[in-house]
Length: 118
Image 1 (cartoon, rainbow, N blue to C red):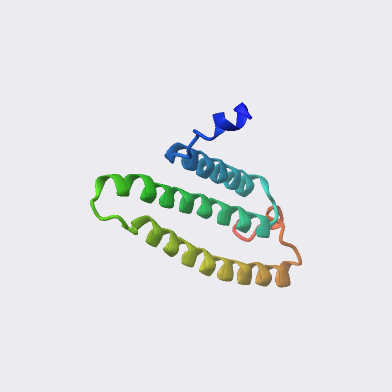
Image 2: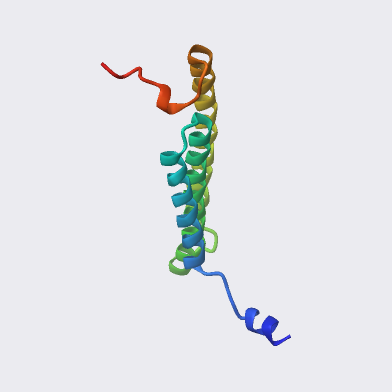
């Protein structure tokens, strides 16, 4: 029972959110560089965008509410909403491009593309 009492005093602060965001961003960055499938690369980019969203919301919660008298400042939330909208558009255009490339080349492997070579 004393172990539960030790954990009841813990709180999640800004550094915890920033660490989770940094880990997600690094995982997405690894996916972009290591994966060869175009769909996996697109998913890794989405993971990096979600890590940025976590950081925006965390900064909005912990920084803005301490320095401004207004209780609800939604700057981080609005920025995260714009990123979600851009990510949805990016997925739509990206999947359309992937489908077009697959129809022409019959592959989504990035290593097999040599269109820009001389």
